[in-house]
Image (cartoon, rainbow, N blue to C red; front, side, top):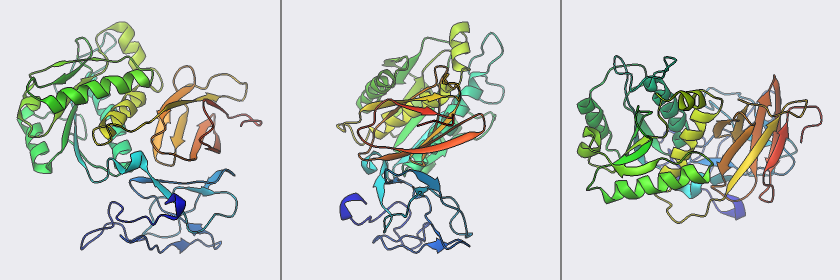
Length: 344
């Protein structure tokens, strides 16, 4: 880790049968070289690379064991490689169940143009699951596809997983809300932190309120029903279908979950503006932060995110087939990313 601190006990490195084999619990590593002799650095759940200011490039894959790789410095890399814990390690090892409402014959609400809330809920849940896994959490979805599943089954899945948090995701045909069971003080606090996360990231902030849905009552861990926007309102439906909105919702839910175990952390909000070769906002452009989180620019080309760890962060963005990379220093705020030949 930065500052000559040994990276110990990373998720997947402990126990009798660790799932990660290229680094052990004491921080010793075994890395592979590709056919050109370059060292490839695998991804490490719960951490992102600590890059240099010279830029970053993707390391190639040259072994069956190392399945995915994070950006490494384009110049001669410092040795040994350094990683920083995502969200300060707040999510490491925590067990979280994501429950996309609806599925099968249950639409979860339907928009005037036929948009099914169940499909939106699943898309948000999948994006959020990726963020949580990258941050070192253990994640379980109650459904992986457009399948019918009862509330009893959803609770059973959560209990069998020994979940520490249960998050039901909806876009119900009712005013947006963050629902918690009336007797759950932890659920109420979670709802309040989620509202604050949405507001800080520039999203409409749903109101917290009591909710008596069966899963919120029956799960043995704190539970929350997050319905950030209603699908049956034409303007809201149009907004939900716009580029970047669902991933922005997923990211706000990610930040609120991380704050469950890092309530007092100072995570300033930052933004990036993606422009095309003509200098115009690039809507729907994928933006990868720290080799871990794939966000998407909105209609204005903007991506908002929280600085959940100190230090530089590698960013990769693309539009119109052009891919560029850059390292953002802590002093960089509101950077403009261009896909043009003179992009910064």
